[in-house]
Length: 489
Image (tube, rainbow, N blue to C red; front, side, top):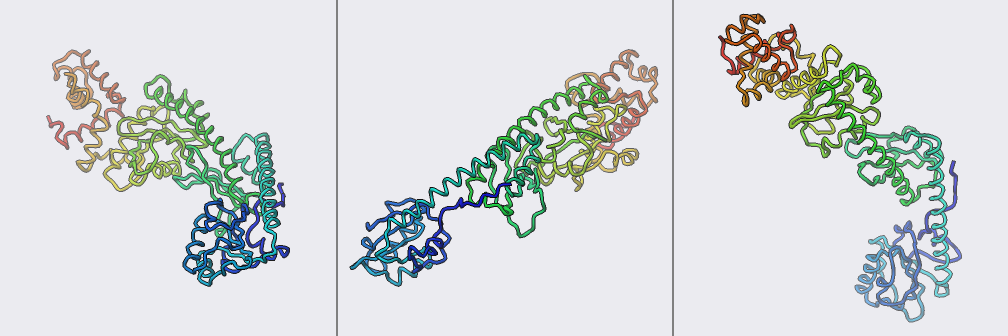
């Protein structure tokens, strides 16, 4: 454990005053006593602000000090605006007296004015300040080396970033947390509980990670200034960026797997091992998302949601919707809603099985999404629609959703092709799937009917000759009649 007790902070005004060897006293501006002194400079010119840098202790015998009260006030203001740390006056004979107006202004500004004897050797005071600065630089260098050594040791001790954060925190007596800026979700949480009144020191982690490093300093003086936290944040940004690159690659692999499943190049059952390697275990569902786009992030970064750091869903999209394959977990679903913003809607399929099929799960999620758009609910499962579907749509909006889901691609096809697929399907179901009667009523050859039904299956993913297909297409046809797309015959 790092128990370095040497000072990393430079000397303060209060500490200079407490040094009895200097004989300094507060004449005004005591509230600024915690100011840090970064350098010391003796100057008797009338414009000392032109010759100093921020944090400089200005030492003067009063030779450049104006005499009139209003001039002294303006002189002090310009010194304060130059961010001098304080003013030490060791007046010589015939130097202008400090007016009460100037002292009052210093009090208002919280700018320390220190009195000293003319016998005070400015060189001795400057030497003390410079030694303090040099010691702080040495301490900072040593602490930086210690931080790099601790970080290197942690890299050897664990391959997991959350474990390494705990190791670093233990060795430096720190409690560390990495927070996602968008959702305010801890990516890596504090190793020990934090009291409500214990406010952490926060530093933004650079790069595209959009995260913040929070530090609770338990007993260590290691982080007495911002220098070292920023070094640690920079080191963490490299690791977080590398993990983002890894997730980018895993996401691309997932999109390719999604396409293969959709195109039937691989069966869902055969993909089980690949899904398990992505952390997709248990009952998986397909979800269709209609994002509100009120969040600041978009589809391209969806896989960087903190909840997806341990699992890697499959993602895809079309012009209007985003699709994902993931466990049916309310925490994951709510994380997506928070990510895209209020008003986001998600339709959820039944659990995907080899019998259900991947393509059917997509259709189910789309149908659920179509229903939810007309409601105040954010999430809806397809399973909750089963009874409603069995009874048929109750409103025109629901009817449009059902027609759009089952017949959307058929209607698009008919706009550019002459085959009357919807009419063919309606006649086929009207005559209870009788091939001979249907072909006769449509005045076509039986093989032409076989071809048309095959096209319907390819467009919808539903086989019209199965009991499930007959049920769903019958409900959809009734919905089409409700909205005037088909007429009773």
